[in-house]
Amino acid sequence: MQDLRVQLTETLDEAEWDWLVPHVHRDAIVIVGSGLDLVDVGMAIANDQVQLVQRWISEQMIGKPTVEQLADWERDRSRRFTTLIVQPYVLVQEQST
Image (cartoon, rainbow, N blue to C red; front, side, top):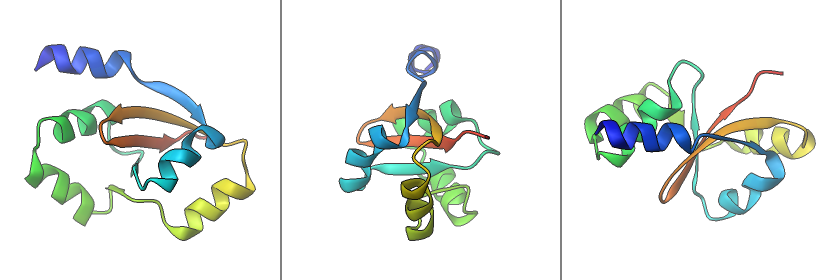
């Protein structure tokens, strides 16, 4: 499991909104709240920790972007995101401006 954490940590990246749009169209974006570590969430998803992931969803700590968020990002294309791909999802955290 440590190897997976290292691998996920090494694949953390930064993305512009435009780079995420194709993933939005295939409904693959998952927003991770700033209170969670992106790699921890990636580990939970990759290891099929359903109860933990469902708890985060129910506590609104992770989830699909809302229509309002998508509209905001579309209006302000300068926003940047920290990203982590855990197939089939792209986990994103909006960076502070």
